[in-house]
Image (tube, rainbow, N blue to C red; front, side, top):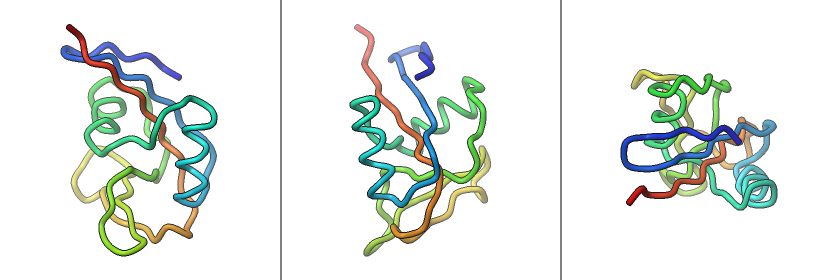
Length: 99
């Protein structure tokens, strides 16, 4: 994982293989004891810290029955949704607050 120092937290970010949502969630936990990134974490890592866009990636945000938000870049039109059985990159995040 790449360690990113943010003003209020430390964010660790990694991109795994293209998997279904369930498999991507399991990958992040199994490899890093992390979860899929939230949209905010993804944007902090890729758009603000320059970690590098992995292509279309899952987020942890549900958008409906069996659908989750996906993101492929730093603009609003690059946020969409995907049904859980499709395969997109696993973007993994673990974040710790700074005190």
